[in-house]
Image (cartoon, rainbow, N blue to C red; front, top):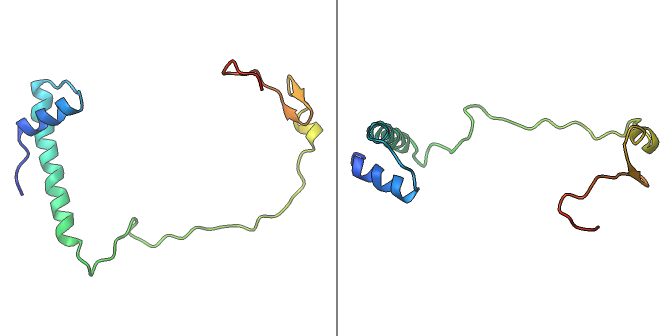
Amino acid sequence: MPDISADQVRHLAELARIDLSEAELTSLTTELGQIVESVAKVSEVATPEVPATSHPIPMTNVFRDDVVRPSLTVEQALSGAPDREGDYFRVPPILDEEA
């Protein structure tokens, strides 16, 4: 696998409009090289016999039954509202638009 060069990092920084100091350029060149090496190692292990996973152990979602329970009435929920319109909270417009 080819090494990452400082010229390549400089070019990427220019494309991304990022101004890098020489110290940052040196540091990022080393770090990106290590990342490329790590990805190459993972690619060696990732064969068709190894299934793709997002977690090392199987995960399942746990759902509970959706049960209706006693709740606040509309009057109780809106009792502390500074302004209301019918069964809804009334809030000031934020985009200078009339509803």
